[in-house]
Length: 427
Ligand SMILES: CC(=O)N[C@H]1[C@@H](OP(=O)(O)OP(=O)(O)OC[C@H]2O[C@@H](n3ccc(=O)[nH]c3=O)[C@H](O)[C@@H]2O)O[C@H](CO)[C@@H](O)[C@@H]1O[C@H](C)C(=O)N[C@@H](C)C(=O)N[C@H](CCC(=O)N[C@@H](CCC[C@@H](N)C(=O)O)C(=O)O)C(=O)O
Ligand SMILES: Nc1ncnc2c1ncn2[C@@H]1O[C@H](COP(=O)(O)OP(=O)(O)OP(=O)(O)O)[C@@H](O)[C@H]1O
Ligand SMILES: C[C@@H](N)C(=O)N[C@H](C)C(=O)O
Image 1 (tube, rainbow, N blue to C red):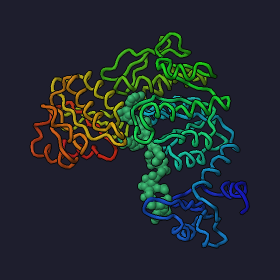
Image 2 (image 1 turned 120 degrees about the vertical axis):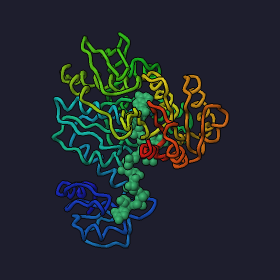
Image 3 (image 1 turned 135 degrees about the vertical axis):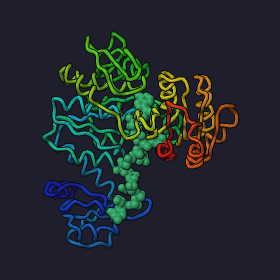
Image 4 (image 1 turned 180 degrees about the vertical axis):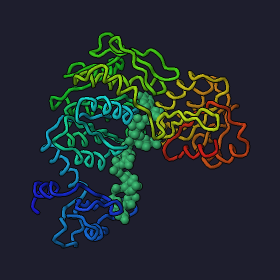
């Protein structure tokens, strides 16, 4: 096979892409990626035995008619994805930002799907491997493709844009997430704005939040469509209520969501604005948003043993922690319990940021605060009403000993690595 177009011909004959022999679909093309534990090259034979059409490897010693030897398997996957993107030539909307990418993507998908054929990134497949896989799952029959883009360092969004070549883009926010790799909040703004840079250079359209001054400054001079509470916005959406769920008003239409937290207002507004820009009927937008229920530990409301739990344990960083604490404060209930786990990838300000979160808990007047993880544990002793544990399982044991220590409603939030959802077993 000489070049990417030859490989592409094979892709068109195949049943899709596979990167894991344990989940191999017959007639797919196996890409032998390298991971932390294994070298995918070692599974190429197994892939072919199990019915793969072809294996793409970068181990030069593997000579076989059913194998394509390339310089770098990952790079080839990305090149194939970009080649495919060019062939299908559908409008692509990219969504990035520090918080709310997945929620916004899902809302936009629901809204656009009311009137168009749309596909979006599945789950959280948003990185240098996930974005190519997402693109390769799109077809020319689609009216739109939605690509979520995640990053934890500079130039990553630029690289994902070069692969996906989006025509439209939306940045949810610039927040204090992945500070370690981005080099502080200025680094986050620069890194996420690589999406704007791409759109500006390629005559794309920027959807932006009219209430965010940084976004206004960066987008206003370019091809754009603005969304926000301000009357100047191309699409004006007003926050009416946050209790128990976010309710908004758009063009005399009241939309009652099943989402908690005022932070979700922005995510909902974006889906309304993007829907309206593409001409989706207002009633259809309302229906799509009102039917959307959050899942996978992203601000889920769960009732268990008579307790009301706000399970927000999918991830955490200073911006989303603060936003959720403020929303939890607004929730009904006199004896709330706050259960927090460490925030990862914060970098040099980690101690300060963990301290600041506990300080915010004091300021908001929470009395029953339990925290776990090395970082929170270190600063917990400086606060009278905070009990700190080194690990999630230590905290779990403490709760198990006497469940009456936990009054409802309960907030549970921490970084993915803390696996705070396991606390649910003892609540
Ligand atoms: C390469 C790969 O697919 N890795 C996945 C694998 O991880 P691991 O390192 O353990 O790989 P292995 O060493 O086990 O195996 C190597 C390859 O061999 C295959 N293989 C192995 C055994 C076998 O019997 N047969 C085989 O074929 C194997 O399938 C490998 O291909 O397994 C992990 C657990 O399931 C996966 O987590 C891992 O996936 C990696 C991390 C990945 O990047 N997956 C993408 C598809 C993806 O999009 N994943 C997202 C995570 C996105 C994310 O975190 N985004 C961040 C921002 C992005 C930061 C970016 N710089 C980054 O670092 O990613 C965000 O904040 O949103 C997801 O899964 O949710
Ligand atoms: N607009 C927002 N502003 C601040 N925090 C938010 C916002 N939207 C969601 N969050 C918080 O972020 C959590 C994760 O939401 P979501 O998965 O949509 O974000 P994400 O950016 O896709 O994260 P990841 O990249 O890790 O998948 C939510 O449970 C909530 O706590
Ligand atoms: C889950 C992953 N995409 C992420 O957001 N990680 C941060 C550091 C977290 O787990 O909170």
